[in-house]
Length: 113
Image 1 (cartoon, helix red, strand yellow):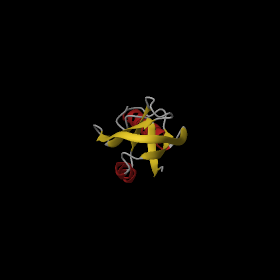
Image 2: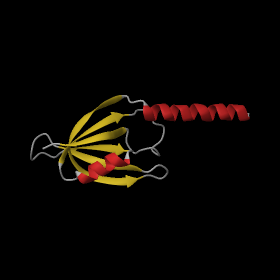
Image 3: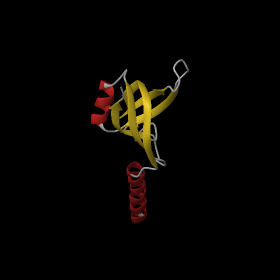
Image 4: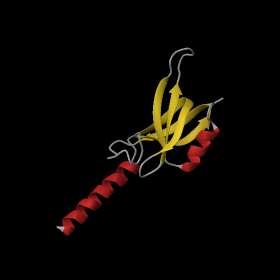
């Protein structure tokens, strides 16, 4: 019984590690970060909202994202209010929201002039 539980725990840990490190897709999104805060019950992550506007005067589309790297979070904080391009990886299948509130993890930020 103990061996079975140990095997199940190892399989679960392996699955979580796989979903957090393997990305389903990656890309860039541009806009203005309008909300950015540190959240989480177990694992603290930075959670943000990017307002993407294609046409001026039209209500922007909001894209929710997560940041796990504190250096990237500081870069985003420094660029608040500016137009930015965020590079992200999408991680599907993460079993719980304890690791992040979204499946989109931003790993780079670039200010767009």
